[in-house]
Every structure is written in C-alpha cells, then in structure tokens.
Image (cartoon, rainbow, N blue to C red; front, side, top):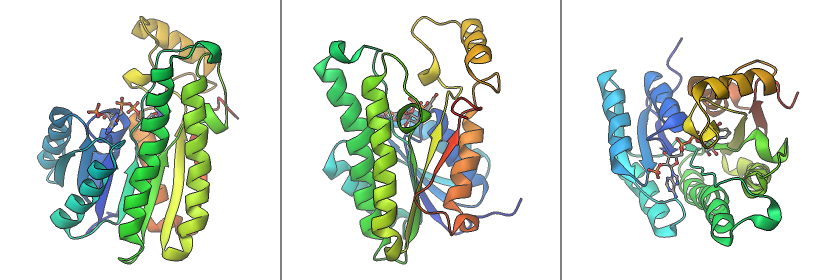
Length: 253
Ligand code: NAP
C-alpha cells in the first residue's frame, strides 16, 4: 500500500490505548507524524515507543479534553512540534456503569456528556480554528453505533452523548467544508477493547455474547476501525463530507 499520509501531521486524542493506539500506529505506518493525547502519560509514551520501534515519528501530550485550556495548548503543541495540523481524530470516550434513565447518577450523566460530547466539540473547535487558516484539513470523530443507530437498555447516557457526536459531526461538516475542513465520523459497534466487556464478564462469555448478538459473530478489531478512519481522513475520501461510517458487523444492518 502507498503511504497516504507522508509529510502530514495527525493528532489522535485517546491515543494511548485501544482504538486510539491502533489509529495512531496505522497513521504512522503510512508516513504521518503523530501526536497522541490523553490524561495519563504512561500509555501515551508506550504508543510513542511502539511507533518509533517501527521507524515512525510520534509525540505524547497529556491533556484533558474537557478542559478548554488543555485543548488549546494541545493544538498549539502539535503545531509547534511538527509545523502544522492536517488530520485530527477525536477518539476520546468514556462509559459509565449501566443504569436505567431514572437511575442514572448525576455525576455519571455529567461525566459522559462532558467527556464524549463537550470534549469532542472543544477538540474540533480548536482543530478547525487552526486548519481553516492554514490550508484546511480532515477530522474524524469516533461516535458509536449505540446512539444515532441503536439503543440498548441501561445505556441512555452513553447513547445520548454519542448520538449528539453524530449530530455535531454533521453540523460541523456543513459549517466548515467551505473552509477546507472535511469532517466525518466512524461509528463502531463492539470492538475488542475493555470498553466492550461487561462488568465481571469472562472472555469466553464475551465471545459467546458476540456470536449471539453480532451477525458477523465477533467483535471488531481496533485495526479494522483504524482502517476506516484512515480512509475517511485520506484524499481518496475528498468528496465524503458529514457522513458516518458504521462498522458493527451487521448489528444495525
Ligand atoms: P479506551 O481504551 O478506554 O480509550 C479511551 C481513551 O480516552 C483512553 O486512552 C483515555 O486515556 C482517553 N480519555 C478518556 N477521558 C479523557 C479525557 N477527559 N481527556 C483526554 N483523554 C481521555 O476505549 P476504546 O474502546 O479504545 O474507545 C475509543 C473510542 O471508541 C471511544 O470514544 C469509545 O466511546 C468509542 N467506541 C468504542 C467501542 C468499543 O466497543 N470499544 C464501540 C463504539 C465506540 P486517559 O484515561 O489516559 O485519559
């Protein structure tokens, strides 16, 4: 495969673990300089070591995407380090213990909305602000099939936050395509990371649940999500604006 991102700078939020790490590695393998961001330094450094071990270039930056000053500084650091920002993947997300709507704890509600929705908005706000005055760019938000596409009992807070990410993605795409900033989303179904494991569930129980609930019979891999993200961020998707690529093994087919 040709290197689609040679000479480009990519910011991946939540790049220390799971899907974000796979996305960061995939961009680096295709020639990008990558900044990975999250709250904890250790997992970010591990991602950088993995990228450097393959001959790639990466930097770790600690930031909490719910804090406006952190996000502003993160974009500034990316631009200072590599001279620009061409692609951003807003992958940070969190889940809280399942609860019916009337039983959701106030703190849990605010946490999920603040990290998943406000964090995505704040990230886009600063990324777009740079891109629109520096030749444009591409943004991919990680939403979920649980939101705009599917609801399940006990996941009201998470589903609401992710449906809002889908809506925000489309609004931002319309608002900023004329600025040269192309914005899309990827909405995974269950992906093989701890986030898709239920409390107390064994790997065998999880595999059985996937066989039962997912037409494809398994969870997706972080690398499969990364492949979709790279496509949407690449020039081959130049006419793809405000769309959402649902990757869920057929759950919402
Ligand atoms: P994950 O490993 O828990 O990744 C979440 C990342 O976000 C972590 O690296 C975490 O690092 C970072 N993060 C959390 N809160 C943050 C904050 N306030 N500021 C900065 N960074 C923060 O889970 P994942 O499965 O890879 O999920 C990645 C994305 O995919 C999420 O948006 C998730 O909702 C979405 N998704 C996942 C699945 C699935 O089945 N796994 C399905 C659909 C959608 P720190 O804790 O160090 O900050």
